[in-house]
Image (cartoon, rainbow, N blue to C red; front, top):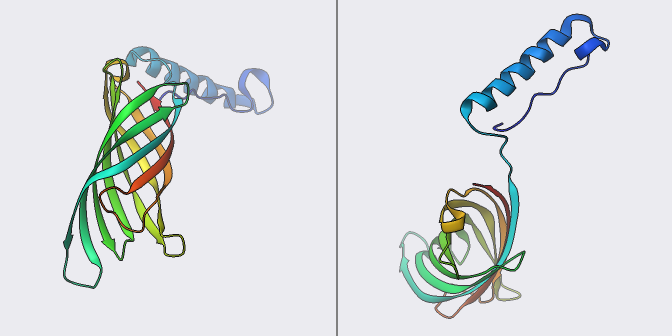
Amino acid sequence: MRGSVATAPVGFFGRSGGGRWLGGLLASFVAASTLIFSGIGPASAETLKWKLGYHLTKVETSEVGDAAGHMVVLARGSGVAFFDGGDVAGATLSITADYVNGAGPHDAYVLHTFDDGSTILVRFQGTTTPDPATKTSAIKGKFTFAKGSGRFAGISGGGDYDGKRLAAAAAAGAELYVDFSGNYSR
């Protein structure tokens, strides 16, 4: 793993285990050399959590025709993201989905734009699962930081998301909320 430091096995510097200390010393030397000669220090991943609330502003659907209820969805959305630590960003979303009766995979990008002009582009991929009893749909999956600018230039990493669409179907005006939690480095 990038940035990890080898630990010495039992037997290093005179503990029980005889000659195994040499292997630990060699592993430590290789790990230290890798860090020194690569020009980077240990990677320090930081946790980033935020809540995104948005509504769908435009939705287009196309029936696939192979089975009842099978459709491809293309949607746009806009909203606001509230980050732990107090940052707030405007959010624009581009979403595609492949649903059968409202359930199936989705793939989306959300561009977060902060007051100082910095941006974070996040790609999230997961599944949508409708709940007929509540007429809502659960959304969950994994996300990655695709890129950033300004104070987020070089951002990488990712994590998990979990949320809900507060409508039975993906239609213009539908509201959604999503909680994101992940790790990043720059």
